[in-house]
Amino acid sequence: MTEIRLEKSLPSEQERVGQPSVPAEGLERYFAREGVDPLPYAFEGKIAVHPGLGGSGVEKQDFEATLEPLLAEPRTGKTVAYIHVPFCETHCLYCGFYNKAYREDESRIYADALIQELRLWRGRPGQDAGPVHAVYMGGGTPTALQADDLRRILKEVRAVLPLANDCEITVEGRLSNFGPDKMEACFEGGANRFSLGVQSFDTEIRQAMGRVSDRDTLIRQLQLLQSYDQAAVIVDLIYGFPMQTMERWLADIATAQSLKLDGADCYQLNVYRNTPLAKAIESGRLPAGADVPMQSAMFAAGVKAMQKGFYRRLSISHWARTSRERNLYNLYVKGRAHCLAFGPGAGGNLDQSDYRAWQEEVRAGRKPIAMLFRPFPQGKLFKAIAEGMEQGWLDMPGLEAAYGIPLGEVWKPVLEQWERAGLVERDGAFIVLTLAGQFWQVNLSQLLLDYLKRALEA
Image: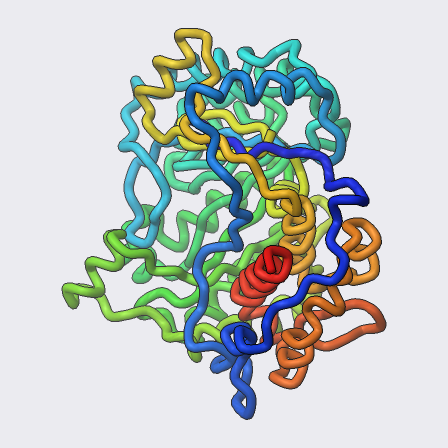
């Protein structure tokens, strides 16, 4: 079911703060280490989860009364839609996302319920008024669904949602069990981007992580998908796996580049508690993955390799080779965009991860909602900061003009210390992350938001 974080207009001029500040005795927790190489050692450890925006929960009995006024208003600004597919044919060791074991007979049942959910808010301005700029079908593994169900879900999305003329429509998935029938069904449904979880081309690493296809199969499947010449083809690569040396990591990048894909995403492995990977490492069945210094070296080597291959950087982790790759969903969803959410484990802005409960609510003609949050007054500003940091820079004058808060003065002690530590530098009025700052970007984003929230509440 869906988690919805409500959007509201900016505070009025009278509500905006003048000169918030943080007491000097509380500053040290925001500072990085000085006198060390900042790339591996700026902080004691990395924050794995992207910055949260906070907010207060709405009681379940107030869900309908809270949502109705929002649904009666047309959306303005960028909008994305997220469709959650809960199924996976296998559970990769490192994965901490909600998923449900896939059975072929579930595909039709799920598609029927999802199509019904897509229609629930039809005719409501909150869904129908204003273009949707990116649609992301994620999971789970959307490509596990049967070809006909992929086709009819995508066609229904195009029929129900007011997609922009240049809407990016992404199908996420894996290359195993993704043959011509499913590829062609996605094209017929209007998909124009595929984000495929390769993670590594190294067969030994893949098998250790519970992946099915070997290196040669991956390459053949990618070449088949590319041969249609109908959509952007992107692969996810991960660094920091157990057994993954620097040489193996660079070999993965070289393989991806040799295929002339439209883009690639380079992510760091996060080992979450209670995942099969964490348990395998704890039991000694697998060696530990790369430590932070090694991860930082892999990150830097990856940046260098992508730049040397003349890839265009779209954000900290996302790279494009051709103009087909825009990465709109990932950019917008981490920023100020509205997010219309559908499916049993989706989260949006305008949740419920119980698959059966989601089905029952949809069949009863109700939008399935598990949680509803009201943002605090500066929620839009916080999203704008997260959006900028995701791209590696902050437009300080633009943020100050838009939100009426003197961020340069508020953050001055922290930004000056980070500059001394080698994490940020100034380019005119812009704050730009150095290579080390890019590696520690999630830490920096969370610290900036925590610091600002504390200053606003002081």
